[in-house]
Structure formats: C-alpha cells, structure tokens
Length: 549
Image (cartoon, rainbow, N blue to C red; front, side):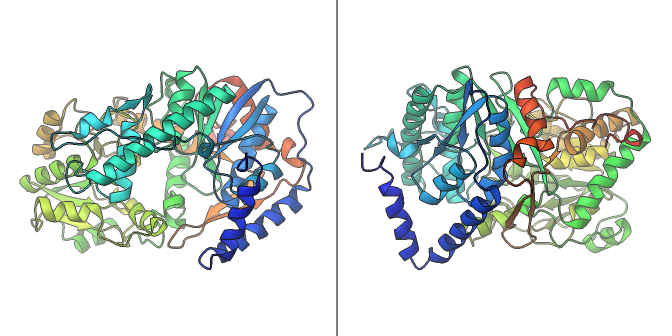
C-alpha cells in the first residue's frame, strides 16, 4: 500500500537529489519536465469519444525519449485507445512526464515481481540451445535471458557452464521473474495492443509474446536511417520474428508492381549519399560520424588491395546485440558465423578480403560504460591470430565511411545486415547467412545451410555480379526501406548529436492542443486504425517528379 500511495516514488526522487553522482542528471530532468508542462499548457485533453480499446505502452526513462514517444501515444488515443504505460518502478519524474502528455494509467513491474525468483541449475552438460528454448509458465524466456547475458558480458558465445555460469543463472532468474510480472500485467489490463521501442530483451520480450499470444497486436517504433524520421511496424503471430525495417509481403508487392524509372533510383541514391556525407546515416548509434569517403582508386591503394583480384567485404553484426531475433541463422550465433566466415576468407586468397567492424560498437560501448576490447577483435585474435596479407581489417573507430566500400567491393558478406540492402542496390553481389529480412526476394545469394554458405565462400570469386533485373529489385526494396517506410515527424523534431554517445536532442513543435491536429499524429492514427503492417508515408510510392518522394 505504501508503494501504491506514491510516497515511494517521491522518496526515490529525494534520494536521487541527494546522490552526488545523480544530482545533476536529476535536476536536468526536472528542468525538462517543467519545460514540457509549460509547452503543453495542460491542454492535452481526452478525445470527446470514450476509448474503446486499451494499449500497453512500454515506458521510457528519459524526458527526451518520452517527448519523442508523445506523438505515438497521442495517435493511439486518437485512434480510440486508452494508454497504460508500463514502467519498471514508480519513478516520480517519469510518471509526471507521462501524466503531462495525457496518460492517467500505469502498470509497474515491481508490483508483480516474485519475492524469490528461482532458476534452473546449469550443469557442465547444459547447452546454449537448451537455455535458448527455456519457457516459464508458458512464456518464452530463454532467448531473452541469453541476450541479456551476452550484453552483460559483451560475449557472442558465452561460457554458460563455466565462467559465465553465475551470470547466466542470474539472467534466467530475472527473465523468469519478469515473465510472471508481465503475465500479471496482461491479465490485469487485458490489452488489445502494445507499443514497443525494443522487444529483444527482458522484460519487453516476454510482454511482446504474451500480448501476441493473447490475440493483441504489437506495434514497434524505431529511429529510421536519418534524423527526424521513425520506422513503424505492426506485428502479429504471422510476422513476429521479422526485422522492424523489413517490408511486409503487401508492401513488397506494391513496390514490385509500381512504375519504376531512373528518377526513383536517383532519389534513392541521393538519399543514401546525402545521409552518409552528413553523418546522419543511422545516427542513433553513430555509424558514420566524422567519416571520410575516399575515391575508389585511392581507397584501393590505401588498403593495399591487389588490383588483379576481386574484393569481398565481411560486415560483422555486433555479436551480443539482438542475436536471436529477426529470423533463422545458419550458425549458432553471430560470433560463430564470424569466426567461420573469417577462416573461410583466410583460406581463399584468390580474393581481397576486408573485415569492416561495426562502427556502432563505439556508441554502444560509451552508453554502457564499457572500455574493453571489441568482441570481434578478440575473436580474430583467438580464431586465426595474425591475419594473412590478403585479409584487411577496418576497425570500428576507423574514419573510412562504409559508402566508399560499396564502390570497391564486388561481394558483400553478412547475415542480414542493412549493408546487404545498400550493397545490392549499388549492383553488388550479396551473400546472406540467415533469414528474416530481405533474403530470397530475388537480389541476394541465399544458401540454405552453413555448409552451402561456406562452400560459396570457398569459390566466391566465381560468382557473377547481379544482372540488371536483380539490381532493379534491390533498388525497389531499398526504396521501400529508405524512402517509403520512414515517416517524418512534424509535431516533434529530433536529431542525434554527433558526439561519443549520439545524444538525443528533441524539440516539441506542436504545442498544447495543437498536437491532436498535427499531420503526423493524424497519419499514424489512421495507420493504427487501418491494420496495415507497414506504415507507408503518403505518396511515397508515386513518381518522384509528381512529388511522391
């Protein structure tokens, strides 16, 4: 009862203000709260018609993120939903911010967590696959727990029966406790829908599964490839494992059937190049901050590439980031895929090989307070030691922009990275090692097993480049991902500072009651009510000359 009274939240705020390490941050959040209240003017009244449905909204921690989430919450309210914001605990500032944007109902995990969560024992014979398949009270927990463990340890193949055993048990116990709490929240609020930013870790993954299994729809929102734009997707049982920036079958049919011209490719090419050069390209994780873009000839000389050989680039995924999601992999995890791919590259000296470490490592390390060696570098050292002369390494901190690589490579090697979409639309052969995003659509090389994949790498130099029809398909797909699907916000402006943490900056443009009438809110409300899987920007599939892009 004391917890529900609100006193606990107030006491926590006082403790934060007294904590010298958190005082400045807390005062900054209080200032942002006052500014938000002032800008809104208390005028976010409820719509005249009572809400008929209920949406669970996974709450966020900072005022900037909450402000960015505000147009979506307003869109759900406009579409006839009553939002219930789900928070881990009763943080006073967080609750006050959500109340300022019109939320009056909350659910808290801390109210439903079991007092003593248990966890199964882990023996020397326990396998990672066994843990990945774990469920608790009918709720999937294994892959969320192992994803958490990987992030804690920065390890793509954790030693669950050895040095990581204690952390593995802790991650599983946490996932079990959150599964029970999520089930209690769903039972109490009986949602028709839920809204997520990320559902690859506990507790959001358990909540995502429970809502879908209960017949509700799940919606995700993510930052798009450039500042000020979001990617929105609706999930149901049929597409629960596809990537948030993939295209639904309906969207893909529309893109395949639309009239296509060189103007579409020019619009797409310009979008990609401008975002790379400005540094905005996936600025949320700072992938292209302060990069340079050498001309192809100069870059080949700089990297010491043999001009008589074709060039393949391996683009590793971050080993510990969303490893078990978005499809089915041919290898146990991203680390095993990388190690086996690297060994294959070392054996095939008929090609130049480049290993391009994911630049997002830097921002993610800064945000998590990690200062150690990147997992990919550790894997290289332990798997092969010194790289042979025909294999070059571009580290995460290198200042060579990825855009330049598309003009020197012949082959792009990935599991399902965005780089595969980009390379394919520049007319390069892409080899995938997993499903769930853009594979098997006619413009990539998609082996069906690990053995078939490694066989292709052993003779990669014999693969012909894509023909014109394949490249056009790739460009149509890329047009959908980078032009048609991203929705620009006009009620809220946001951008990522090009600093070490890719800090989020948000500015509220639609003040007070004007938020209800904002074009972006109205468009999102229509999409929510309409039931389409992908949100498509209005007119985005028209001819660019006609104003559609």
